[in-house]
Amino acid sequence: MKDNKVINIIKNALHRRYVPVTVYILLIVSATVNVSLRGGTISYVLFYGVLLYLPLSLFYMLYILWALKIYQGVDAKLIEKNTTEKYHLVIENAGILPICEIRFFYDESITVFPEDFTKNPFKLLPYGKTELETEMLCRYAGDYDAGLEGYTVQDTFGIVRIKVKLKVPVRVRVLPAVSGVNEDAVLRILSEEKNGKLFDLESPENILGNDLRKYTEGDKKSSVNWKRYAVTREMYVRLPEKQHSEMVTLVLVTEEPDGSLESIKLRDGYLEYLVAVAQYFGMRHKPLMLCYYEYSVKRFLIDSPDSFHEFYSNCLPVIGGKAAAGHEELLTDGVNADNGNILIFREKDHEFK
Image: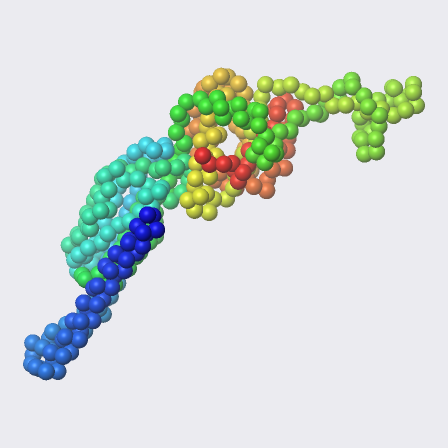
């Protein structure tokens, strides 16, 4: 059934495309036959009118590309996912000729206009201007281009159509929705390593305890228990003592987004999961240290509802702005036993659901 539907759509598209071309060719043939058989002023006017139709249409469309000025934007610097924001659109004709018909298009998988103004064509008088105030919402969290992608212009009969991308799209920074504490997300982060890919659990063990084992080649000499060596003349090393800390350190390893829908979805799922974990710790007054990369290593401590809200408003918008992949050692450098368990959260291995 789906294959038949696709075939019908293709057939309809080809039909709409080729019918005007066929009609135009028939008009040229008819005008040529008419001027050959009958001659006269009217016949020649019709002949040259049909013949010059396409060149004049192309010239007119080039004029539209030059004369049409489009400005779009939103009021808010930060947008919350699936929340409507005020959207402004200004269309201006900077030339002396009217613009008969332009149609806008956008990526419906990313942007939503509750009142879809793109279904109807826009027309502008010479030096005319149209301003539109409406609403827009974005489907995913992250930093990407949204709003109108471009517009199409075509001749009267639809023989030639030009699709133009806007030079300045709306660059949005969208925050994930805060929908409540997700305890399942926290249980996952504390108990599941996901085959060592999603979360790498590292427990700092830099304090030597009282447990001993025999020295083996490669052990640090500083860990040798020299008092026991003096008595037994055998070398034993002291084992590190595991430290227990309530804090969890989350190292965020983000990727460089490529602008594709797949990368936008991946970032959306990554940020949603991060917010769920951060909210859990903040609302329960449990310490969570975040390490992320923004030109240099940054750290942010969440240990209260206030610190969570500060993280959401100020810290979250810049996370992922600069790729942290390849900076894992730099991110973990300086993290010690006081920072508790270290969890390395890699965006590339995060599954979007």
